[in-house]
Each structure stands twice: as structure tokens, then as C-alpha cells.
Image 1: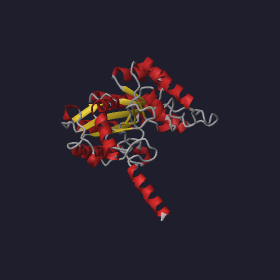
Image 2: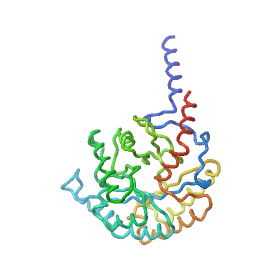
Image 3: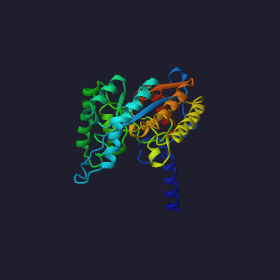
Image 4: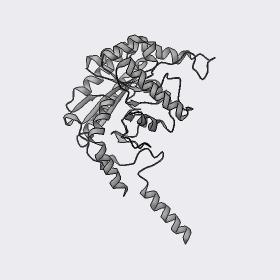
Length: 313
């Protein structure tokens, strides 16, 4: 009898705490029941483009006697050729990107750095190189890593780092806490939602998820052995759904690009068509992840946090 009562009590406690599932970083809430988000200009969709600006080492630190020619060459094609083709299309459509930045790229390719600055891009952290993850960092090492990243981006571009995508850079269990501690605002790696959402951090700072994507991501052209025309149709289909749903409650759409993929001769024209399609609609906020994070924290965060607290009771 006592064991049965204990089980019932535990289930009741579990139900009460079920809004915060492992790893206890964010609370669960159906998107159909949340407070309404209104983007600037009453836009339905906040649309942002995330070029992954990457450098892969010829001799990766974790296997210094094993040259990785395929990865090195693929990334190098993107930096030699693909970036410039992609940039022309983004500039044509007046898209100010927020790139996922391998920090050392700023030093290796000053021409790319200058072009990104000229286009007024924003930057989020994506590791030093795509071949050096931080999984084994101690807290002190990771704290120094974030301070160095923020300082170097500011010195090289004039911009303040506000967010990150992990990817090849990896993570630790403290990454969100340490980012928030340094004044960063968002982490895109979780890919949990079509709206921004509060992330719980130990210091209590206002820190959020900004929607990134594994779907409208040109990496799939390699992973799925699909070509750029197929990717174009995916982009249109994704946008159409989010645009329809955004009439009721604002949505975010991210388009993730890699210069070595979308910058190929047969692919760039499909990016051109995709941007023409999306930006040809009224009610689209052409923006960056930095701006989405700042707007959400200033205009939506408190309301959503209060709603979460109320529904936990």
C-alpha cells in the first residue's frame, strides 16, 4: 500500500515537473498553446540566413599524422570560389547574413573578412576550426575560450558576438551557462522549435534558443545525395508552411548555407530563386539571428517566462 502511494506520489511530481525535461535547459509547451509573437511590422516570418564560414585543418589536431584531404579541399573550395558566388546572390537580395564562424578564418582569409564586414554581416561562434571540438574542455578552459572568441571577433570585425552554433565545434554541459555569463544571448544548436524559446542557465540571465535548421540546410545535398533543385523545393515548401502558420503566431525560418555546397556552379542559381520567392512575400522580416534574439528578449521573453511559470503551478 505504501509502495503504491509512493509510486502515485512520484508520478504526480513527475507530471508537475514534466515541462522541464532532460537536460533541464528548456520547458515543454505545445506551440498551439503559447503566447502570441508579433514580429516587427507584424511580419509572419522572421527569416534569416546562416552561412557556415568554415576552415578544416589539413592535419587536424586530434590526428596530426593523418592528412584529411577531402574535408580540407571541400572547405577550401568554398573559401576560394563558393563564398564569392554565394555572396553575390545574398547582396543582390539585400540579405544581411549572420554567419556561423570558425574564428581562425578571419586570420586565414582577410579578403573574406573584409567582404563580410562590407556586407555588414553578424557573427556567431562556430569553433576555432571545424576540426577542433571543445568536448574535453574544463570549465576554466571553456571560459577562456569564450572570452578569446568575443574579444577576437570584436577586434577583427567591430561586432559583438551574441550567439553560437556548435556543429563541429562541439559542446560541454556548461556551454550555455558560460555563454550567458559572458553576455551572449542565444544558442542555435538545440533545433527544438520554430519559435525562439527561453533556455535555463545557472546564472539566471535572459538566454534563448533561436531557431536554426537541419532541414533547409544545404548540407543535405551531400548527405541525401540530392541536387540543388530538390533543395529549392524544400525551401519553398518549408516557407509556405511557416508563412501560413505565422499569420496566427510568428515563426522563424532559417536558411543554412555552406559555400562549398550552395556556391557550386550548378547550385547558386537555386539560392537566387529561393530568396526571390521568400522575399517576394509581404509579411517577411529579412533579419539576422542577432536581431531576432534582441527583439525577442526585449518584447517577448518576460511574457513567455511568466506564462511558463504559471503553467508549472
